[in-house]
Image (cartoon, rainbow, N blue to C red; front, side, top):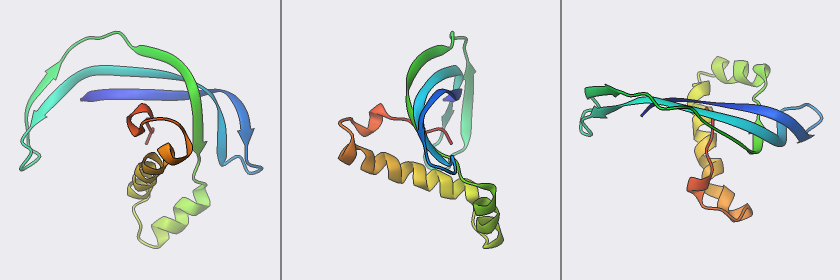
Length: 112
């Protein structure tokens, strides 16, 4: 789909002393303005469609991890793709979350 989601912290309940890991309440605003059709075999886009929907807004609870700039710089200096690494961690967290929280993995989303 063609979309964008903003997750904004409203109130911090807890955080580590360095502030990199936290939990609190958040406001989510999701906008969807279209979708694309693509060939699964090649990934090539064959059609783009646009439409207008009102934003979906809701309040929720959030947990976050901020990767410090010095850690990102170290990853880059070692030839790692920081965006791909963060994306990988998102998927790992989603996979193990139902072990600790009574939910379905599809009930939770990540911003990356």
